Image (cartoon, rainbow, N blue to C red; front, side, top):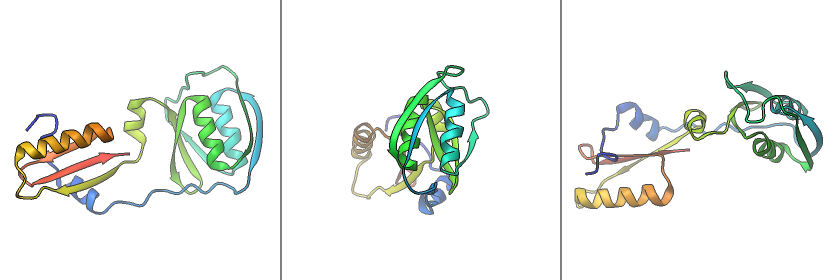
Amino acid sequence: MQDSLAGTITPRELAEARNPLPPVELSGDPGVKNFDLRADPKSLWKQVAQAYHIDLVFETDYQAVHAGQPLPFQVNGMDCRGALQALEIVTDSFAVPVGPRQIFIARDTPQKRMEYERQTAVVVPIPEAITPQEVQEVANAVRSTMEIRRLVVDAQKRLILVRDS
C-alpha cells in the first residue's frame, strides 16, 4: 500500500466516526435585512452579527486581508445565512457556528479551514475478498475524486477512515 494512505486508525478516531456529534445550527434572528455599510472587516462582522443578534468570537490573531481598509458591504433582502455568506466573501474570512447564536471568525486560508472547520469522519470496513492492491486503488480514486483531506487505510483492522469537512 502507498505510504500516504496506509496508517493506523486510533481508538479515538474510531469512536468519533461511530458516534458523530450533530452539527451546530446557527439561529440568528429571522427575516431579511438590508445593509449599506463601509468599514474595516472586523467592524463589518460586528455590525452584521449585531443585526441578527449573533455573538462573535474572533480568532486570536484574526487579521483580514483588507485589515484597516474600509470595505463596502451593500446587500439587500438578505436573511442571516445569506448575509454571513456574503460577508465571508467580502472579508476573505469564514465563520464556524459554535452555538445557536455564536460564530467563530477566522481568515479564510486552507490551513485555518483545516484547523477550525468541523470535520466528519466515516469508517468503512474492507471486505475480506478485496486484495490490498484493490483497496489502494479504491482509496486513491475516492480521495482524488472527492478531494478528501484525510483518508487512512488501516490494513490490520481492515478499515478505511475518511475525514473531511
